[in-house]
Image (cartoon, rainbow, N blue to C red; front, top):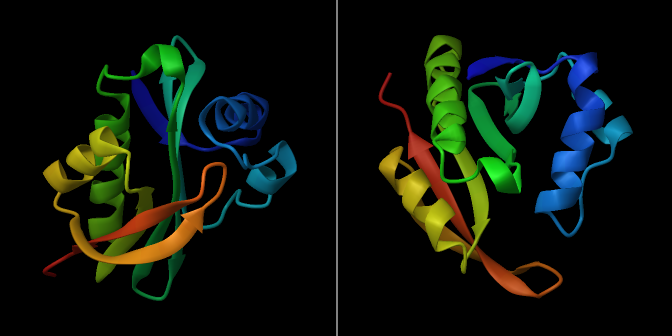
Length: 144
């Protein structure tokens, strides 16, 4: 598996991953708008996208928009590899913190984020739809 910067060639596959993972998926055009902005990384196996992470940046702050892995590639270390590479890039960019939201019921994702130094810092009530659910706000504070 390799982790590469998101490029135009990935957009159709990432839009399909979005559809498989989320109730309100980003379109190919929405993903295209993120090219060259922030930190958007793609995990590839045999030149096929199997997951991605998107992190928008403002000044010294990072905001993870999505972490998505194809259903058939889950529980194989893809998400962890993406977050590890993102962590290296975030350190190089000298960000002060990175934050994200995750469904309260997504225990596997919460465990992964906690293992990568993200800590629960709050709740966003009714943040998600289909079904309506609170989000756990998690933040990784970098000590640079």
